[in-house]
Image (cartoon, rainbow, N blue to C red):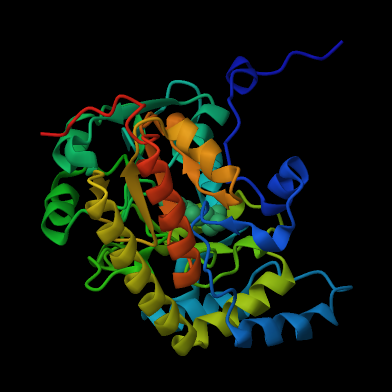
Length: 374
Ligand SMILES: *Cc1c(COP(=O)(O)O)cnc(C)c1O
């Protein structure tokens, strides 16, 4: 017999990740090399060659525990941003920073404010700690910061602003953020999730709120533009008084040494980031033009993926899988008519677009009773 577990834990519905290439290969009897994965917003160029070299080097020392304090990487991040090492906390992916926030601030009765179509992990983590998520409508799939402000109660502990947001790819601008920060009460931690920050042309500045000592945490990651998703390394930026609290919640060696070495080297490789940004922009423009040509509604994206309305998202997801193309169905995000596709190499983008065109020609994109959009 199982000892009693928390009800809110038993009720948890696990996060639905992008389908791994190897899993589809097994299921469909395909060669992994014939499968393309455009499902998890990974970098199609892979890691920076400099990061790879640093990681190979670090492997030789894999018998040592990592520097749990992350001295070198935290220092490199702080230097690049004009912050102090005390402002930086490393996570096993930036997802772990969300968990630290839960450990530090959440309990049954606490509330977490998110946008209706925000990144799923905020709600998952809130539930893990028995807290309640208050989902705020996001007209046009854009976070409505005024409405999120209005949703704050004395029980609110955290507000999540994903900027750009995943899966919508939408961005809130500086003016809205400043107006929000002018009025948000101090008992709330404002979390800016900037997983796709590096893809922006003119990113809003929220680090000024870290420097000003406000109760904000800015999260960034090496999983996206840096192409190190497998290594699980991300970070939070916060005023020292807040970073210190989060540091207490983490396991001693949460960020492994290989990841720390790769991340530090990748951070210095501005050329690899430039190439990634260029490829992303080209591919995003291409995909959005293809969607427009097919008459499909899509949300103009600020990140390395695009959300597109195909009618029956699950059916299109399955049809693409049969051709060895993995995208993301969006039912779990309350968007059953949509799929999200990550920008790949141009060759991968073309293969995906050709498959989608073929589905459109078969009428498969309208059988989902796509309602015309006003
Ligand atoms: C991908 C992503 C993350 C980052 O996840 P890691 O744990 O760093 O791999 C965080 N937030 C959003 C919105 C994302 O899309």
